[in-house]
Image (cartoon, rainbow, N blue to C red; front, side, top):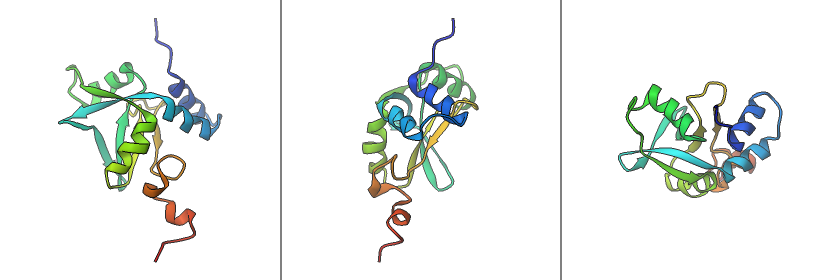
Length: 138
């Protein structure tokens, strides 16, 4: 029997299909517990396009698919279960560099990126804060 998707995974499917409210998706991410692999005491992340991406997964099956393709293969993966709001409100600002959240990245049709922009991360660490405020500050 296939396990049902989490509410966040459902919102991701909706947005990828071009329906659903983006604000509802962000809200669901904030309310969801995400599984984040731990590597050497820190949260597993990757860098791309000048952004550090914390990799989170909606459930153990999504994490296992990732681990088989990009991790230690069949060995268990240590992970932390963290609320999405804690990731974007506390952890992202503490890293001191543009950081977003990449969810279910092993699932081609079910992945979603939450970039470090206003409305997702705190305004003080959002990469678009100067643009939103009318330009760079002197």
